[in-house]
Image 1: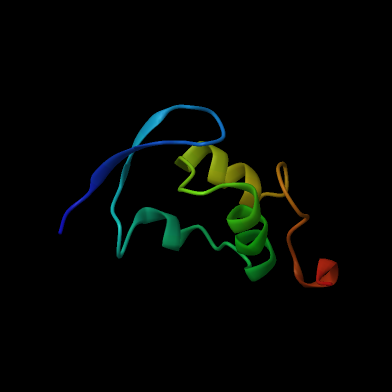
Image 2 (image 1 turned 90 degrees about the vertical axis):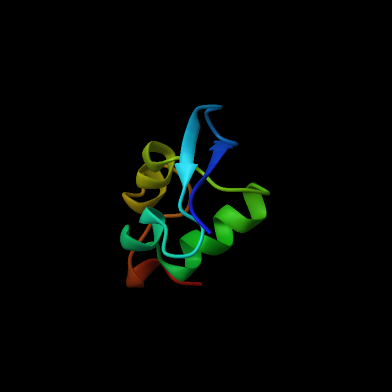
Length: 68
């Protein structure tokens, strides 16, 4: 199936999406962060933007103490 080129909805950069088994599955995205991403965007984010979500720089604060 291979990777495909996508454009990050947050920053507009082009990046490779590995689809199933992509690098993004290794970043440790919480369920709350994934819900925020799904509500905020219609497609994937690049590694840099997704890392900002994982670290709490963008989107909901990460970690178990911030669950709703």
